[in-house]
Structures are given as structure tokens and as C-alpha cells.
Amino acid sequence: MTPDSHSSPLFRQPHNPSLDHPVFEPREAEVTLADMLFRLVAAQERQNELLEELIEQMNATQRQKQSELGQWKEANPQLAKRCGTAAETLSRVQTEFLEQLTDEVSETAESLVDSDFLMNEFVDRYGPRMTHLNGVLQMLAQLSTYSDRPNAAK
Image (cartoon, rainbow, N blue to C red):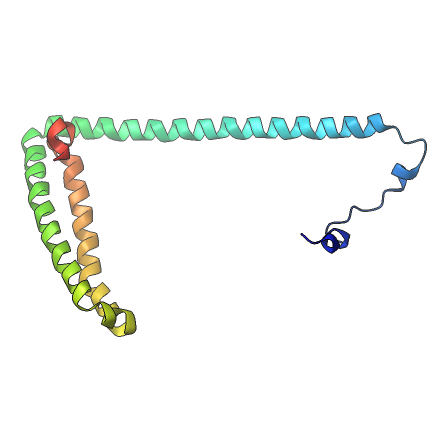
């Protein structure tokens, strides 16, 4: 900041005649400041309490979803296993699709940068398929029994 910026009306404190008055008690200002700080701390504590409640609610929702998913897997073990097999297969399909996509980007990089039309064509061709494939893969992975096994990370 420049020295002049402190003299602008934005940064200047309003003149308070009571501060010029010899009867002004400094303790009044201390009490007011202490009261404001107390209120600030109380508001911060309340905000922390609300955040803790929100986190607990989110955790409870997540635990409920996990419980329901576990129950579904127990009730449908064969289907859960088939979901895992399908997820593995689609993961290989996704890898091949990504290879095709990245090859095309490499081959047409300059054209994609220079032409909005070609870029839109590229996004229209690959975007929806990638988005939907991703969604299906996520669903199958969640429903599969493989997500519970240590070897699932392979």
C-alpha cells in the first residue's frame, strides 16, 4: 500500500468526538472490545458445532449407503460377482477407448487448437461416450464383490 492509500476515506477511521473528550474512560473501549471478542468467539464456537453436526449427518448417510450396498451384495452374490467381471471387461474397453482418444488428440493437436468446429466435433464424438462409460464402470465397481477384496486394486 502506498502512504496515500491510508488517507483515503476508505481507510480513514471516522472522527469520534467522544474520544477527544477528557471524560472518556479507556475502560469503556476495553469492555466494548472484550464484548465484541466474546461474541466473535461464541459465534465461531456455534459455527464449529454446526459443522460437526453436518459432518456427522454426512457420515451417517454414507454409513447407511454402505450398509444397504453390503446387504444388496449379500442378497445377490452371483450378480455382484458378475458386476465385477463386467467392470473388469469394461475397464479394458475404457483403456482401449482412451488410447484411441489420445492418439487422435496427438494426430490432430494443432487442428483442435485452431478450430472450434473440430474441437466441438471431437468433444461430441468422445465426451458422451466417455462420461456414460465412466458412470457404468463406477456403478459396476460399487456393486461388485471385488471392491471388498484386497486384490481389487489390481
